[in-house]
Image 1: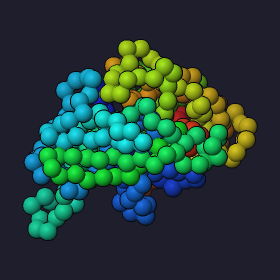
Image 2: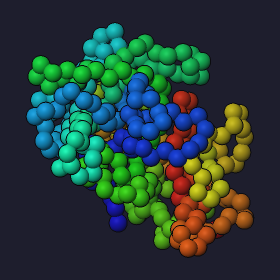
Image 3: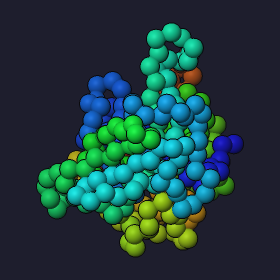
Length: 317
């Protein structure tokens, strides 16, 4: 059984999203998305891959407690949006562009896992009709060397945690399964599917502001709820993340039983979701490539104002 044992964890995969509607990228990615600007949310835990610093970092260095430091292994970061704000750092780690790091000609980056400060201005697309917030950028520094990454703050940039996320420290789970658990903490999968009426727990980052706000780099002492999140269920086999139609009303779109920051964790949200009484013709999972190849038969979408992320699970028909 896989469990969460980290005091600071998680951020966006590289990449984890399947195709869907209205998706906002949650981190620097390779492929068909622009490298910059990086979309972020207040309080979000995210990894930024930067070039030009990190020459002295030859292994992963992680913060060893809270409050998080603003400097790790000689690397620091400051987010400027009118005024400079020191950025709490979770870990720094050298990464290579090749699987075999000894291969000649491979490039390298420094993966910096950080928490976006809560005290920034962000775009609320419902109120401001998508008008961008004030320009912001993060300057990374190591000694005299600096490099800058432009960011665009949004009200939310939801990312459901996967076991392959770099922020877990040793992301070697190539299946990239989501962290969705039963009440006893065991993972939901084809061997242990969910049941109608069962309350599952999802873990996510990037859900945005809470009230009250938590100081940057700090872990809350108690659960702090966040509002504005809805859950939409998609009972199609192997479905990717998607946003439901505007103003859609359906028993498959609900408010979660709870969503908010978890005590003792930095920037980590818990979302409790009750599985609805879905359609009667639901087909059971058969993940075998020689069989029906139904890896998931229900996709849970977490829907915010500016972003959506979803993960597929197995539910007993």
